[in-house]
Length: 150
Image (tube, rainbow, N blue to C red; front, side, top):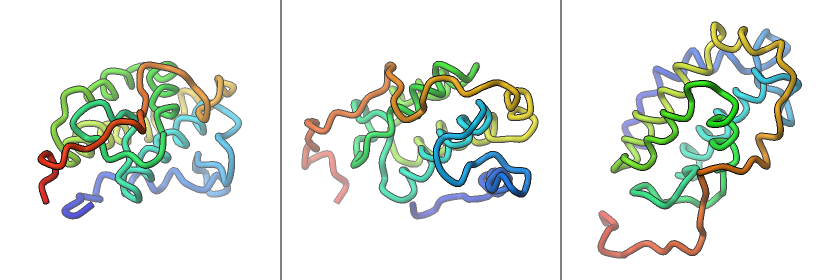
C-alpha cells in the first residue's frame, strides 16, 4: 500500500525462518501455538499488502479477494488480547486504519519473541486454516460505485 510505514515490521521479519530461531514454518501452520500465531498474523499481513484483502468485508474496508477470516477467528479465540484488536474492524474507516489499528498492533503485541516464548511450549490448537468464528467474508457483497474514491 502506498505510504505504508514498514518500520514496525522490521522486528517482525526476525521471527521468520525457524532454522534461525524464528517461528514461521516453511509450510503448514506449525508444530506449536507460537508458530500458529505467527503464521496466522503473517497470512493476514500478506493478504493485505499483496491483495488488499481483509478478514471481514462487512464493514468499511471491503476489498477482499481471498477469505482469510479463519486466521482472525483462530487468533481471536486462542490468543488472549487479540480479540479486542481484531474487533476494531467494525469501526475502521479506511485501509490506513486497517493497517494502523489492526495489523500494526497485532504484529507489535503478538509477533514478538517475548510473547511467543510464553506459548511456544503449548501444542497446536485447532487449525488456523479452518476455524469458525465471528469474522467472515461474503463474496456476494458488491461495491457501491459511489463509495469508490476513483
